Picture (tube, rainbow, N blue to C red):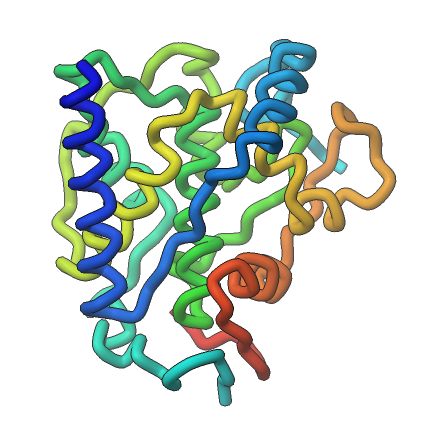
Length: 238
């Protein structure tokens, strides 16, 4: 078992290194054990709610190092990608044979981190739809409408899977390698400790309803700092 885990970690590291070499993209690591313990402790205290977002809630670039290696990706996609396509990719690539699964809550967080790290790396969103700062963490409204009746159940694979650009798939694999190993509530609490969700909600209590949009610039700048990339000017169109 330990050998298998070491092998999988080496494969994941290799995929991240290939992504970095081919495109200049980087995914921040989640190695802070102190933070992990805090997240797990808080997660156990907040294991309640009504699903991924709770009930429906109302209410020129510069970068450190060499410039604009993202051009190697052809700006990543030949055709428009939407949030549902990203979600379907994650649902199609979870390792179900080993017992892994993805709930609605976990899917929302994977899609959020895909958007966040894409913005951080390339100064453009992977999809255009806004992400909102709901009580249970960042939520894409169209995904909530699609999966709102799933509760805490594992989501099935999509009936159809649209093939994405190879570099996009490589990027999403890196996100899945980094975040797919965590439980949904862990990912929720992780987002609760990060500035984009916290600042967007302001002084609202943790479980208060909120449908405020997390600014893409805030996501870009916060996660960009983690990989030493600094952007100036407006975000590019997807």
